[in-house]
Amino acid sequence: MKTEAYTSKPQGMIPNSRFPLLVHRNAIPGGGIDAVKGRFRRHGWGNNWQYPGVYHYAHFHSTTHECLGCAAGCMQFNLSVGEGGWTKLRIEAGDVIVMPAGVSHEHIDASDDIMMCGGYAGGRDWDNIQEAFLTPNLYYQACKNIMSLPIPDRDPATGEVMHMWHDAPSSVDGGWNDWRDGLDASG
Image 1 (cartoon, rainbow, N blue to C red):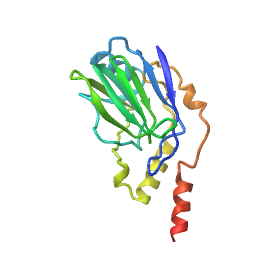
Image 2: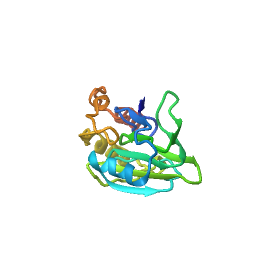
Image 3: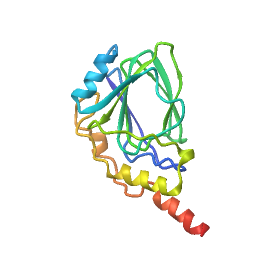
Image 4: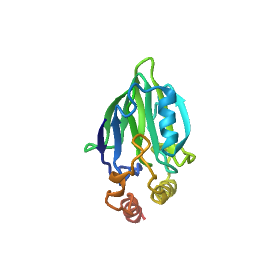
């Protein structure tokens, strides 16, 4: 298994996260719905689902961190991470993405046999936020929600302590100061 890490910073009204988005390549060799969902549940990531992909529009969650496992086929995401602000990422059966709350993601392409499984740290309930529909007050509330979330006990793919998240630089800003400065300047 190989792990990739992608960092992000606030952009527009997408909070992103101080935690890196993790991609565990071939974490669950061969994939499979039962294998992926079982692994997530064993490591404390519940409220599981299965679906042929994910939403075809950019969205993020403020109430929970999410894991996405490719059970079959392959899929391409657009993610609000990386140097340029958006990164295209392809995953295949057996790959797992550990998505910090606040990172926007969308389905942009997939094989005909795509099947994704998801789960949420501690089995939390999720919300669905799209940047285009955020007001400044809703953005502020989303940032507060994200900053109050605990680091999950274990990585959904490996079961290990999430050292990369524990070692992430602390941040209490979440983009709020940039937004507030713009509001102050406009009156």
